[in-house]
Length: 87
Image 1 (cartoon, rainbow, N blue to C red):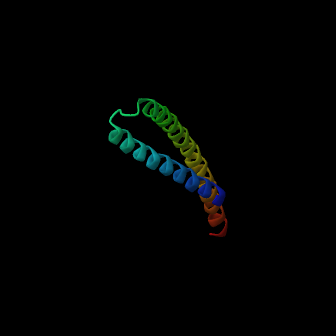
Image 2 (cartoon, rainbow, N blue to C red):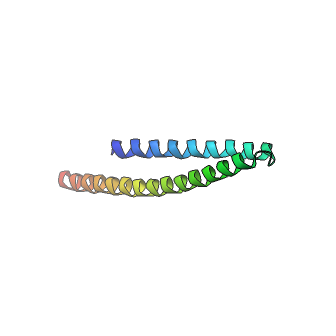
Image 3 (tube, rainbow, N blue to C red):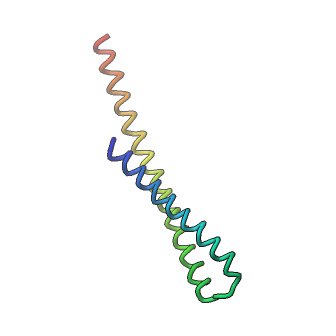
């Protein structure tokens, strides 16, 4: 369970890092005003790639959340059974 929580946290950090980078690039694109068209196109391509990476990471998070829920349900069930045996 700890490993899943650590993995969850690391993926969240990856997403946040990418979102911060996108925000910085969006600001840069606004300030550039089309002066460096070639650089602007490369930046936009990179932004699309990073957005796709964010989508992938969100998908990973959904899988991790599913695994965490599955683990928790196993522990709850085991605790309930253990409690009934003692009771």
